[in-house]
Image 1 (tube, rainbow, N blue to C red):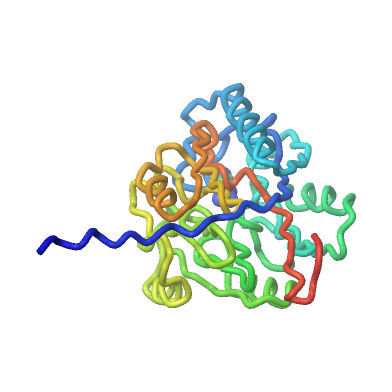
Image 2: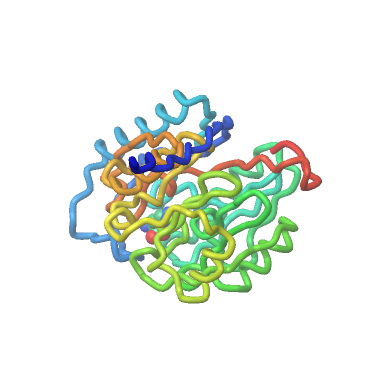
Length: 290
Ligand code: ARG
């Protein structure tokens, strides 16, 4: 009797959907203060290199069929390049950020002015401390939200009410992963990847109940900012150093696209931190367009 061939479950066919992204060129990027463990004001930053990496990210996103709009950076606001923190935009409704640290406080009004010049259905500045997509990840029918370092449960309540979507609060416990988007990435409306040890026990239980098929990343992939990636449903733009995660994504039918953002890492950010998505909201939820 011969042994049966191992059963191979084919990975599902993934479909990319064109996205609308917002980025802010790192013209004023530097590390002049430290508000997360990655930042060292004594370590030199190579701004031309940061600009070159950022330009490559923008070009790669556009080459994959996505639109990228840019917000002008402002002198004295070196972290403005991390446009994911500018706010949350879903179905044309925008909530602009209110930053936790005084060093970034002026970014809130700067991004708000940019949003205000756009055609949006609704726009409000957050009343609670809220660093936009840093801590809030739109995942189709719900918003996954980090709590612990930069925002509080009252910010989660505000977001839930503003967008009329359930917010799932997830406690972050490791200061290296101070924003949700450093430890968790939404791949499509039903698939996520995350690093379990960045979360408290209750959050881990919630994540494994909601996403039993999630891709679990290890510490090395998380430390190379692999989870700080951007997915269009098929392509996943992420750090080339996250080799384990890249293999896992491929095995699940995603197409990883490595983009090196190592110079921006000196500010504590990667691919996702540099990109805000203007999310389309599915019509079945009662909204349309973005
Ligand atoms: N230096 C910035 C800060 O600490 C980095 C922000 C990174 N952004 C993000 N979406 N995780 O606020």
